[in-house]
Image (cartoon, rainbow, N blue to C red; front, side, top):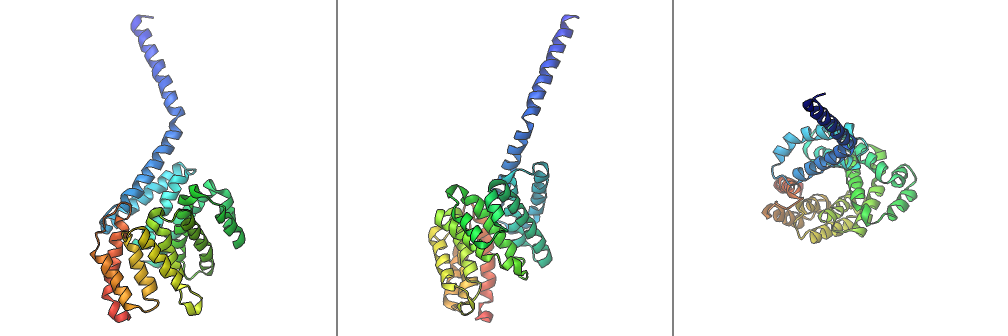
Length: 291
């Protein structure tokens, strides 16, 4: 064997060994990469200031997340990103009720799969009596807030698109308990969004038929205080859910004018704020007919 042949053989052996080493770490690299991609996609969408671009482009992102999950079904981070984006898309960009219902169901399915991976006891409590759910939620700690928030908000979106399903509506107390726990553990999480959801849930019905609108008002005001007025969806939902429920035209119009005069750009809230302004214009234009 000549010298060049021996060198080539050693090079081939070294290359093969390197390839085997790379392959041995491939699964973990793919998992980390998919988690990063999913997280970056979510952040990019939430910080976008053009809802039309998001509406047009988000379906491709959703399909990409589906593919990442198919390749790595045990990634709770990717499952949670998919749950958040599917829920946001169904709730904000889909007008057809049947389609919104189907997409929010997929979001809720992904959220449950993530919950099963990260908190099996809480997952099991989903199908147990309410007291068992409440007990599991009460045992959660600060480290569990992000997971609980993703589960609670995706579940709330599912309920919203399944309003004619009694079983879905019956879960509202469970979602409320989860959001209450988030508010106890980390009130400022996601700019106080737990309070926005609580405000909506408490303001679903008038007090005369079992609703708790004054709790709703307090929750909306807390969200506004935490975000220093930068979470514009808090004001828009405050006007839509509470002010309209109690027929307070002055409060309704004042809140919506605040939203319209604000700068929507805010890290993590830009898309939500832009949508809040769009909705505020519609609500304000229709105020005379409503009141």
